[in-house]
Amino acid sequence: MPADIIINAKNVVKTYDMGAVKVHALNGVDFELKKGEFVSIMGPSGSGKTTLLDVLSVLLRPTSGEVFINKKPISKMDDNELAKIRGKTIGFVFQTFNLINRLSAKENVMMPLWFQGVPKSDRENRAEKILFDVGLADRINHKPSELSGGQRQRVAVARALAVDPEIIVADEPTGNLDSVSGEQIMQLIKDLHKNGKTILMVTHEEELAQNAGRIVRLRDGKIVATDVVKKKEINVY
Amino acid sequence: MVYLETFSVAFRNICNQKLRSYLTLFGIVIGIAAIVSLIGIVQGLQGFITGELQALGMNSIFVEPGSEMGMTTAIGRTLEENDLDIIRRIPGVKDATGLWETSVTMKYKDQEAEVLLIGMEPDKAFMLEDMGYIDIIEGREFKSTDKYVIGLYSDFAEETFDSPIQIRESVEINGKKFRVIAISKPNSFASSFGMSNMVLVTKGAVKELFEAEEPVELIATIEDGADIKAVQEEIDKELEKAHGTKDFYTMTSENLLAGADAILGLVGLVVFVIAGISLIVGGIGIMNTMLMAVMERTREIGIMKAIGASSNLVLFLFLIEAGLIGLVGGAIGIIIGSGIGALASFAASLAGFPFNALPSLELIAGALIFSLVIGMVSGWIPARRAANMDPVEALRFE
Image 1 (cartoon, rainbow over the protein chains, first blue to last red):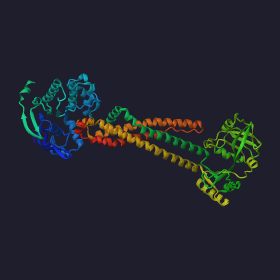
Image 2: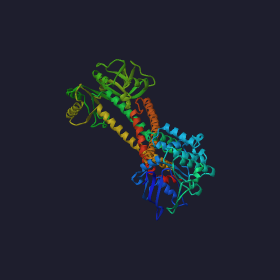
Image 3: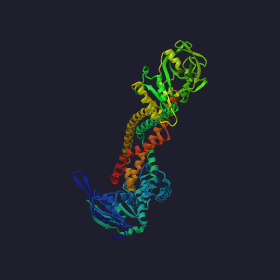
Image 4: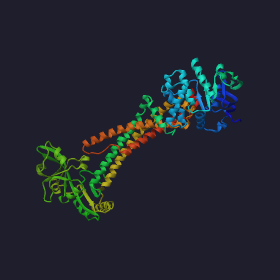
């Protein structure tokens, strides 16, 4: 296993027991994510792309097979250790934002830092800086209900960046946004990649997927194709 | 550091709870209020009774008619004046005296009142003074030559008739005029047992007017350093020998205290059961509130776990929330319970026996810790449920 592989999945199977029938969401997937890569996962509804993303970001344990995070097998870790990996190594951006509505933008961004034991004043400074970076300097103390969809997703991106993780995992990050906000968020993600973050993104839009360096195509729980995207677009920026 | 902050986060979360969550607090509030007020009252009574009995003297042995405590009857005159001589001869006994008691009607300026006549031996009156039975504030001591004279407690003298009885005035008992020669401080021990109508005369007066030749109660004091239990047993033995049967019983302040403690202990047990039931109900209330909170915040729990909150932290957070709810209920309960205690103290002082029913600091601290623990125990199942939640499922929860 080369040193720069961050996530490595080997023959991953995920089966859901739905009473009488067993649903094979993932059916033997092998996958590698290298440091600094930008990979899109594509596939039709029910192809298992979100399940794959959940397994790769250690939100979900596979039924069989193994996932290695920085060479460490997750089957040997308990739930608290997986939480630690998620908190430190991975930043999540969800389609539905998943912000905590009771808390202000700043407090939402501060939360993952709390789990890492960062002192409160440092958390506040860091959250304010990141919110400034994503263009929400004037929305720091607003609650999610007081923000537009695009602004909410930018808070979510800021939260994902709070702990300075190696990997940003995004599940349909523009799926709930209008086209203008969607473009802005996509631009934000591309900028993150350019600044060295490793990006793993699920999308069903071909155009968005083309932003990645590699597109993994999924069907019926299996990888059916892996395309390498031509890099000419990157030179534009 | 991470865990320390769960307290402030938990506190904020509680402040965000809806009104109905607070309604479930009532069980804890009522339970803790009941415990704090009733234990406060019981402890106050205990202190009061202990104080009174100690004032009576821990060196006194009382001999009463009847085979055991509580079996006393007004007609049961089984003690004899001769018993005093027997008791005085027992080693360790310092002195002994008797009380010749009878119920009579007293007349004063055309008004009548039932009184309990206590006839005592004038030369032994100092024993009653030592025990705090008598504390003359006006007038003079009884003398052996006194016959138709009477001593009154100041509260009796002031309150029994329309106009207060003054010293050197006369009252009429059984057609005989008795001159008031002494006014004593109130006997709080007697009045706390509802005997506020005692008046003091000589034993000679009782013997002559009521043909009550024998005393109703004997009191012995023991010498310094003597073993009160051993003396008590000796009195039991000697008097039983003289009477041929055990038609009397002896008791000490300690026996009385034990009796009072037993009664108060029983009251305490009843309190404990009642309060226990409401605390269980309160605990179930908290459990229900927390289960609702966990369900309502499923998505939030999912988010927290996804972005790095460990199961332990989630468990701890919800446990602290439940504990804080219990604590808030406990604090309100303590305030209400203290209010009830203060009212009880006030009512008791109006009724003539002052005692302090306010909860002690130990009781308050105990109640706070107890309510915190109840909250946390009740929150255990909901908190476990939150901690064990699968983040993926929790995130999809609508």
